[in-house]
Length: 164
Image (tube, rainbow, N blue to C red):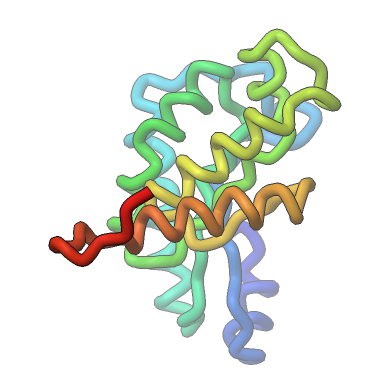
């Protein structure tokens, strides 16, 4: 963990932590977004951090691949396409995609017009196993996720299904 003292405090207090991948600092992270193996590097980073947190006595851990933090547009999209792989870390998965610049840049829009892109990623994230979502448009996202959850929990019925 980056801040060992904070990790000791979290462990002693028994509070949950979120471990997020990023490369560099906020002022430098977008200067180099090239990775030899983005998915593998982010996964390995988080796996090491999870193991260290557990060694320190932290039990409640969520992981966040850090969309937008030191990643290109293509890299963010690739991480999203493979988001389900992070569930193998056996920690709740957090997705923070809402209103990120890669959404509105991909769609050729402004941040103010990116609601549908943010909702699409929330739905895809939920379907891929994300447990936690950081969002801006709470009401719209909750409706989209309610529908997503209805579909994901639906079972094919027999002859007694309602007909439209």
